[in-house]
Amino acid sequence: MEKAKSGKNLLEINNLTVSYGDGKIITEVSFALKPGEIVCIAGESGCGKSTLIKAVLGIKQLGAIIEEGSIVLDGMDITRMSDEDRRQILGTQIGYVPQNTRGSFNNIRSYDVQYQETMRSHGLKFDRNEAIKCFDRLNFPDSDKLLFYQPWEMSGGMNQRMAIAQAVLLGPKLMLCDEATSVLDVTSQKEVIEELAKLRDELGWSILFITHNLGVASHIADKLGVMYAGRMVEYGNIRKVLDNPIHPYTKRLLSAIPGRDRKLPLGIEGRPPLDGAEWEGCNFVDRCIHGGEKCTEKMYKLVEVEPDHFASCMRGGQCNDNE
Ligand SMILES: Nc1ncnc2c1ncn2[C@@H]1O[C@H](COP(=O)(O)OP(=O)(O)OP(=O)(O)O)[C@@H](O)[C@H]1O
Ligand SMILES: [Mg+2]
Image 1 (cartoon, helix red, strand yellow):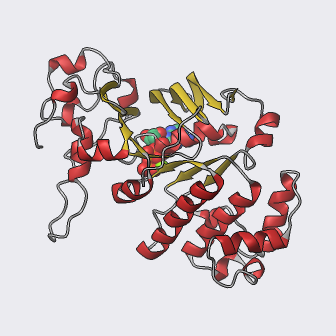
Image 2 (image 1 turned 30 degrees about the horizontal axis):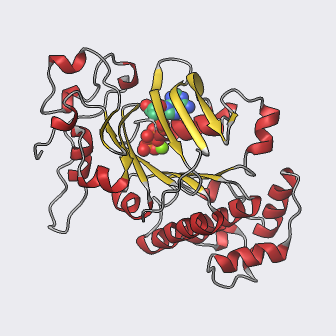
């Protein structure tokens, strides 16, 4: 689904280093989203994907502290914005769909009341007809009745879709989706993914989409970032990264996709180091079949291995064996 737009960036993440007060959790992560672009970030559990989202949201209670680097939204530096100013942009400029929206809605109050409250809290008027038009645009069933349901009456998939619709009504330019489809069955997952792609096409949303599922990434993304233990190890055009993975970790991640041969995927032996964002050299070295002393000498930054494709292995484009 290659629809990358040109022009200036909507979101820029520059050399971002984040902690929760102690050691670094993510180190020197940089990438950008253009208007209308979908960037997926993949990587094993604990590699810092949600921390990245928390840093962009910047809500103090989420605990993520930006130690270094900057986050720029549409030309405005939001790295250390006051809570007051941040309230003005969350929802209306930056939308957020978490993994499980059950916790974002009150289970026993109608969507109608909850949508109204959310809109009012952002200083916006709630227009029921607009909401119904939005449901129609997203092909929701029974769109005229939906607002009067309560979340407990809905399936997980439908609740997730109601959260997306609520985000649409607030009119953000940037959408942050943290595993927004991971808890859904394949049918609901497909519906949500198609809705997000449609919203990007119709409203020009830029979407930062966190997922474990490289199949989903392959379908929806323009670009793919692969994170490992707090670092971005590969980044670029989705087709180039998937067709010609360079970093040994990306290759192992791709070989871990379940096949139809009834065999368990290979997986990746070992676990990412918990303090991997703190390491001097490559932090994949212990799990890498090429890992050697040279790898631990310094942190290898992303280098361009082909146009629109970057990887951070010291072997660079040489690492082309079939692991
Ligand atoms: N509030 C917090 N305080 C301290 N450490 C935290 C906090 N939240 C996350 N961490 C730690 O930060 C690291 C990265 O966590 P994060 O949730 O960003 O990973 P993730 O890539 O989103 O993982 P998953 O795929 O399981 O959602 C983990 O080691 C985690 O234990
Ligand atoms: Mg997470």
